[in-house]
Length: 246
Image (cartoon, one colour):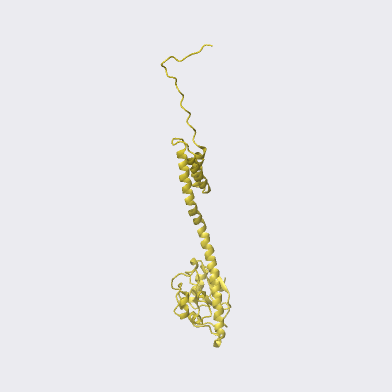
């Protein structure tokens, strides 16, 4: 067999080593991290894959480092943004649920106040209600917190014998505060449809207010019907036509 030898002095070419392909983990990390900016659950996947890809690198010049870093950065950003997005989605629902609970609490408080007014009237000649809620509060039959609605703003409530603030405990002195607007001058023999208590329009984000009637029931009336009824009450019309016609 004929053999061919390389002539002396001529170097034999050595083929360059094949460049290793980029890590699949690094590429996957980058893809998941980028998609995770729109679909947040994939952010965590991109972050984890990127960290693993960087940890498995054997040589500093091994390709795929940029992909892995991109996955870590975008994945981490998505993970940080996820709670913010969840809070922005859930917060309105939580606020609505809290406000619904406040309406129920206010309604319950007003029923208790009306019951206390009736007990007061039963001991008075002509079944007269007290001239104001401070007189009732001084009797101490109700917990001071009963006179305060959780949704009450710290602003003056028109027509009240005491302004609405958070210091409910002071109402026992007659110098305290109350969330509810009392309609004085009625007796326990009045028309059952006549309003005895109502809330200021500033409560409950202006969506409406609770009205308590002489017979003891409490109704939630939305705006603008509630505003019309309050205007009539302040003009001396009781029961308000706006509530009778509903």
